[in-house]
Image 1 (cartoon, helix red, strand yellow):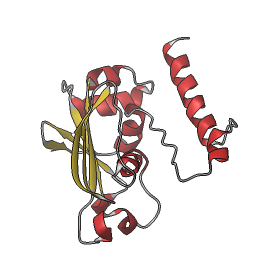
Image 2 (cartoon, rainbow, N blue to C red):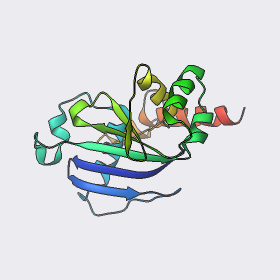
Image 3 (cartoon, rainbow, N blue to C red):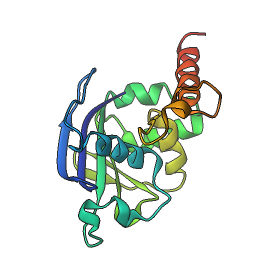
Image 4 (cartoon, rainbow, N blue to C red):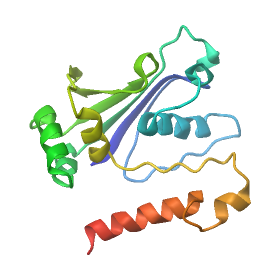
Length: 176
């Protein structure tokens, strides 16, 4: 399963952005042009946010609806690779034969993500969040706001240690 498109609205400095991605992408730009905000938007999409959502909204305007939507292709392959059979059954019943699926997290209900197939919202139902977390790829974001020393160390609780642990876990799952 691969990310195909990222849509961001009203997130920090990003009023509206639609980014079509390929297998390999490089984001380059001047300081303060939105690169970090793009990755923090993805962090919000994958992991939610425990703070005040108004901090994340464009111009801190609480009247604006903020959302991040990520479209995936090769969803059937992602479904096939799921380890938990119960979660696989839950997602399979929602996905059907579709191979392209979108998920959206928005500020009006930031604890849940919505599912869309061909622009139509699919009702989530019970057990959907656990199944979705099993289905979606892992997202590791190491913020540049930390001190370099804490990023560069390799213990199990540092950002680099967590990232390497997840990379090794993925490799071991595919290559015993």
